[in-house]
Length: 152
Image 1 (cartoon, rainbow, N blue to C red):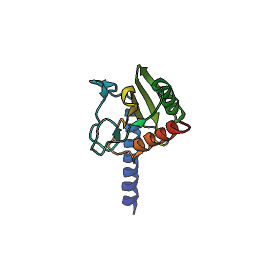
Image 2 (cartoon, one colour; image 1 turned 90 degrees about the vertical axis):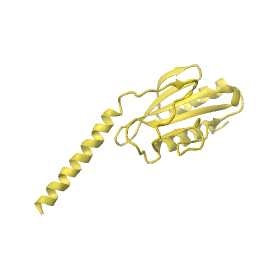
Image 3 (cartoon, one colour; image 1 turned 180 degrees about the vertical axis):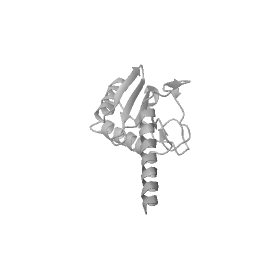
Image 4 (spheres, rainbow, N blue to C red; image 1 turned 90 degrees about the horizontal axis):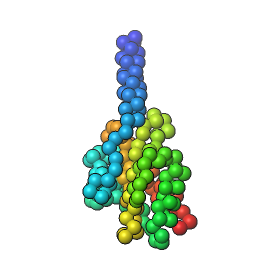
């Protein structure tokens, strides 16, 4: 019986230590920004969604809008902040914000790119560590979409 308790305690310590390590590792910034004028591709893991990569498991619809692109850009930035995002970088038509998950405090990246000509805002949301995210990035984008579309 003692052996089972020791093994269970060792396994619990291992898993807790692993999650703690990943939480700390996720605080290190990863590569962000545009590649050839578009958002960086997803790495092929289910913890990333991207509106500029049609046809794969990572695909998510961009944010569509009518009206003044600069007004909508300000609105999407306000929506990201309202959801708890912290703006790390903003330049003409590009925004990078970070989010912290509530329990383990993993850091996730949200990137937005304004495509004024097509009246869309492209989005990329990705976890910095691990492979799965229990659809947190997809849910984050859908919450962003709901806040953005509110009172349009």
